[in-house]
Length: 129
Image (cartoon, rainbow, N blue to C red; front, side):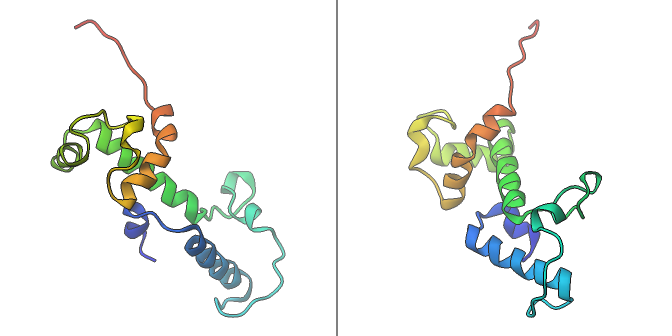
């Protein structure tokens, strides 16, 4: 699967699990269609290298991180895309308003479900002027 698709579209958990299953089979047998004994737990394999893993990232987490980044850009940047996005779906309410849970595409609904992560990473800075 191309990473740019996972960066812009919500990928179902079943798809992530099937792809990770093929990755596990390939890691241990060299073939994605045959299975052998897994000598190390996948949770251990997917740890960062400094933590003793191989640094293979979990696909569900990669997809969530990409969608969080997209939501952050939509809410903080003044690009043509974010301006269109705000004007199309959020004319009457702020972008993170609870009233905005039913509007938008499947992509926006997934981003909205991850809003707590986006809001947790944001802050207000008060300055002089």
